[in-house]
Length: 201
Ligand SMILES: CC(C)(COP(=O)(O)OP(=O)(O)OC[C@H]1O[C@@H](n2cnc3c(N)ncnc32)[C@H](O)[C@@H]1OP(=O)(O)O)[C@@H](O)C(=O)NCCC(=O)NCCS
Image (cartoon, rainbow, N blue to C red; front, side):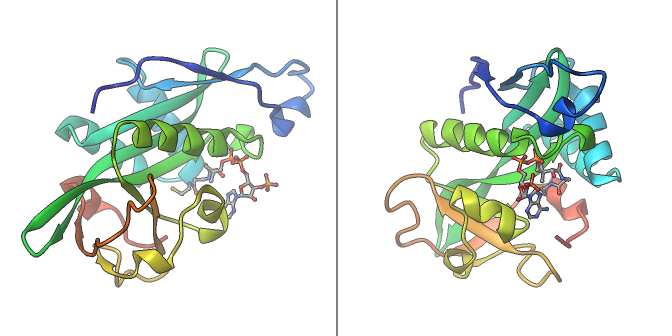
């Protein structure tokens, strides 16, 4: 997938920043693809948001293995405050292989959450992935959050994956173009990096 190089300025109001006495003028949020040198700041956002190391290690391994389809950062001023990754996955069914993406992980710095940054990263990421021609995206996460972006649990039922029997993990999918899910079922093969991720939601 060709990397997208354009940065998208967003007019977001981040309530948690707006309420911060030292930040009467919160910086505008910009979303752009990850650049060389961003890796430490991305890892810091992931550790702060999740409170452990697993997702930071996941992204480092996906990056090292060349399995990242798209990695976007959200910048508040010149600081990375959010990150989303999409990696290449394959659906195997009766000898046929279809390429798709997995959205994981998504993280926003705790102090910048609830201001629309996470949603903006999901929307911009899905827009770019759809534009690249990929027909569907999977995600593991809370349906209460991801339903708003078109992901659904029921259409993911015909697919088996690492998470099919994982307690508390909800596998969701959405088509990225009309008919994107038609005729598809089978085993979803994730990059090796996912094998090390704790399989709970
Ligand atoms: C999930 C996350 C990325 C959302 O980022 P954000 O910038 O706060 O998201 P937005 O401001 O666009 O949307 C916030 C809304 O999403 C919903 N939401 C956020 N996290 C949610 C969750 N875990 N479950 C259900 N709904 C959630 C809420 O409705 C919230 O509304 P509120 O601000 O009125 O409470 C952020 O909370 C985060 O980094 N969490 C820790 C890491 C994580 O759980 N990542 C997702 C799994 S990969």
